[in-house]
Structures are given as C-alpha cells and as structure tokens.
Amino acid sequence: MHDHTAHRLLAQIPLTVSPFAGLPTSITLPFDYISLPASLPPSSSSQIVSPSGQSSISPEQLIADCNNLSAHLTKEAQTAKGDVENWVKSIEDRELMEKRRVAPGWLDTGVMMLEPTKAAQGAGMIPQQPLEPKMLGIGAEEGKGKQAQSPGEELDRAFGGLGI
Image (cartoon, rainbow, N blue to C red; front, side, top):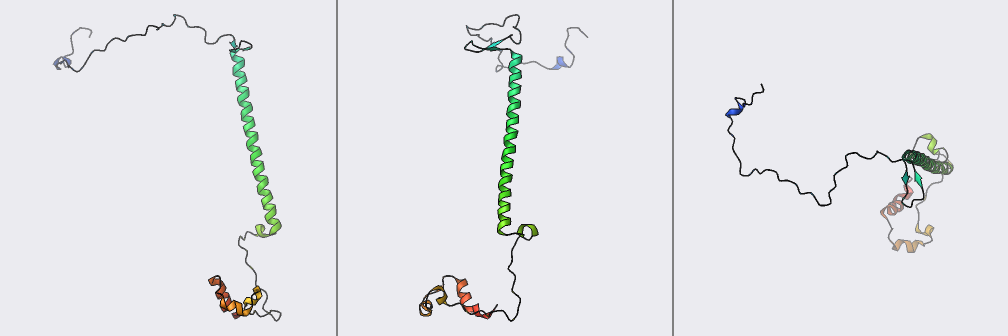
C-alpha cells in the first residue's frame, strides 16, 4: 500500500508539459512589513481612555452603557410611535364628530348615499311653473336673446313645467 510505485491506471496517463503553465513566483514584501508577535496581547485592556485623557471607562461598563442607550432609544421610539397613533386617532375622532354634527344619523345607518325623499302627493302640493329668466334678475326680453350656459339648463327650461 505504501510502495512508491504509481497506481497501474495512473501510470497509463501520459504527462505533458504545457508552455502556458507557469510556476508561481515569490511575493515581494514591503520594507515596512512587521511580522506578528509570537504572543498576542489580551483581548481587552483594563481601561479605555478618551483621546483627551480626561476620562476612562472599563470595556464592560462601556458595553453596559451601550445596551442601556439602545434600550432607552427603543423605548423612546415606541413612545413616539404611540403618540403619533394617538394623534392620528384624535384627528379621525374629531372628523367623525364633525360629520355626525353636520349629518346626524348618516354614519350610523350604513347607507352611504343620501337620497331626497319626495313629498306626499296631495292637495297641498304646488304645481311647478317653468323657470323664466326674470327670476335671475333678467327681464323676459333680455333672456330670450341669450343662450343657456349649459345643455342641462336648456333641458330644464324646455321640460321644467312637465312635472317629471
């Protein structure tokens, strides 16, 4: 098993040298290269000193302060989100109260389209008369010379007296 002869199947494969394959070259290191020391320093020092040198803190205390700050910011974000939701809800409530003041009962019925009701057919009903231009402050003679401003007004003038 450990004899230094090649396997019989591998011995059948001819080896060729390719002119395109090159051997790797050695790497040139820069002059300021310094190798790592044999022993590494401890993972964290006992104190972290500020650049000004006026204050120092232990790494454990720094991590605890960062965790406290993160918890405080999370709490503040949740409080702010709740305040915004309450503000939006108060706006919606005010709009709902205003709608109920303007049209009481409309939002409570579930019917979203208001339709006018017709008055009872009876003797008290006044027959409609065709609208004349004199109602708008224009004399009858002046109104005949002018055209209606929209097709709907022309239809109202033409069929207004039919009682449709």
